[in-house]
Image 1 (cartoon, rainbow, N blue to C red):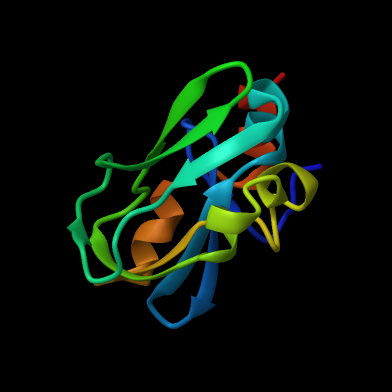
Image 2 (image 1 turned 135 degrees about the vertical axis):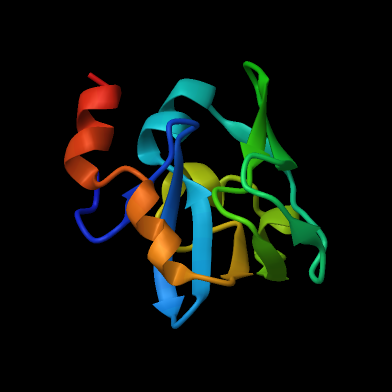
Length: 125
């Protein structure tokens, strides 16, 4: 399942435009399937300034540990605190309840540099 309305990174994060320059970030269904059962999620701190490509968190599963990257440059506005108590939400609902953080970017137009659903589907074939 690759939602058409989202944008994607080659590192398997999804990006949803929320309100103006506010974007919501999580990892894709493909990524959570590859990881297996998620047991711990480390998220960035609200207020942190991040640059595109920075490692901002980590997802630990029964199989491995994977970094989470900032898809665009901006400021972390909020994190999904539910994941500290229920990291399995990343597996059960990666595109909704399993979201990771919200980021405010200077230019939401920079979303166009990310992959659309079709390009992401080709990447994961």
